[in-house]
Image (cartoon, rainbow, N blue to C red):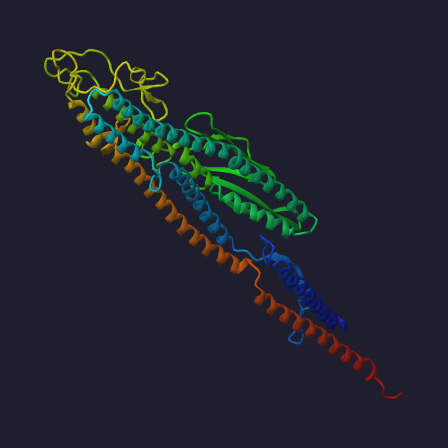
Length: 520
């Protein structure tokens, strides 16, 4: 079969069209070099050959293609780097939530540069020392009480501020984090539908895919997700891309967050302890996933709100750890001083030592909620001490069956109580042995270590995610140098195709006008 005379012109025309379209794509890339989330595009082309095979083919039947075919415009993305980036940003979200929480706690419990509980404890010691030299002087007893009240005010303030932090984090979790995640799920599902409709009409909707990828990256910072793309046939010769997003918990169970245009929803209950998180997946199944998150901002926030480290056998010292540690310090302090202010000397079990007999109950501290369990928020000066019914017990050594009036052994005992070691525990779990002053310093040091550890991890994870982001941008991002080379490349390709058409025109002119003139 003789090749068509104008086949070469078709080849040249297709080459020029492909080069022109490629230049358009390069221009689109350059125009969007500063567009957030934009993915570099590329013209997809293939060799065009419309000739069928011939059973009677011979060596002289040389087959030549008919040029180039433009098959579409696609994005340059690496699915592996996308998955790696989303995994890293989930870990970053966990650590970032931890570090932010520790920063809030440091403002309350870090007394490196401010006067607080430790200085107040020292002031109580000094006031008791003064009273020991002025036994029976009500003025100095009142001074001790005022120093104690300052200490209790600091305990109250710390407890209130810790509760404020808890309420702020809870409110932010419910109204910001959960709302944002639900909006992301809905927006991604809507984009899925729009992309699907565009692809059915022949438009790849690359810009919509960029928006969807940006939302997927943001969603991955909240919880671990896996993204799966599938080709779905809608006609014998047309397929479209369908996206599914799944969440896999720490036990390996998978939940469908987004399936085509369907999407799930998260819900939380912050009214009690612990704060709970539930998921209704895209299929309508509801599950409690409070303790099933592997990483992400949601996990980091739940860790802060629900976990108490050694006190509940968890792997993280959250708000509960510091609240309970402070309450333990306050309870041990109150119980020790209430016992010391009894009118007689007793052993560890409360049994009277010597010939003395108890007179009346003389507690220095009480609870403002009548619970009998001391916490940093409910401790107060006992009414009897406040109204002057009684004061600091000077001595527990019986003098004619009455409280000693000039002895000061009990005041010295109270001073010793402030300096001697005590065992501090929560629900039977001991966390420190030392003085009250050292116990509070230990709480500070523990917070400092946790905060520094979280910040170090955060910096390391930022470095890792930046490296992953740079690797992804090297493929998906727009480079002016590379696009400049493409401009030259496709311009030369266009010129070469145009030159091919000129050459073919000259050959055809020669064939038509320069041959077949013999015999004229």
